Image (cartoon, rainbow, N blue to C red; front, top):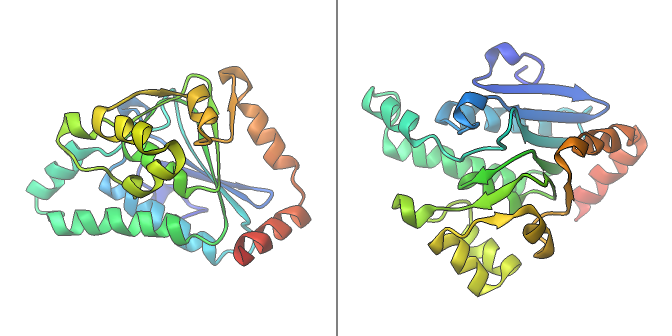
Length: 221
C-alpha cells in the first residue's frame, strides 16, 4: 500500500492519524516543485484512499517554507528528452490529477504552509477547505512563463474573485497575500506561521463519529 509505505513514493510523505491521511510534498530544496512522478504518486495515493474505509479526511501540505512552487517543468522536459514521457503522456497525467481532485469523494483540506505558485494555487478551489499561514502568498505567473492557465482556473477564479481580479491574477501575475485571499473567500482561515499547528490539533480532536458524518455529508452533497 502506497499510503503506508513511504519507500515507494517520490518526494512525498504520508501518514495516517485518527482517520486523517496527511500528504506532505517533500522537496524543500526545490520549493516543493511537483514532478511528473509526484503527480503519479498523488493520483495513486488519492485513489487508494478512496477505497480505504479507515480514512475520512485527506490533507495536503508542504515540507519546509514553501507549500509548492508549482510544476517542475525542467524535470518533466528532461525526462521527456530521455524518452521516459512524451508530451501527450505528461498532459494526461496533469489532466488525471485535476480530475481526481474534482471527483474525489472524501473531504479534501489544503494546509498552505508557505508561498504557493502556479498549479499550487489554481488547484486550491478544488479542495473543500483551505487554511494558510500568514507568510503564504498566491501567484500565478503563467503569462510571464509563456504558459496557459492551469487547473480549471479560467472557470474557478472569476467565480471566486470576479472577472477583473481573476484576470489580474491569471494574466498579469498579481501576487495575492493570505489576508487578501481570505477576504475574497479563496481560503477559509489565516494562521500566524507559529500557530499553524493549531490546524492539526483541531483536526486530530475530531472524533471518528464526526469524521464519518462528514464523509457522509460530503458524499451526499
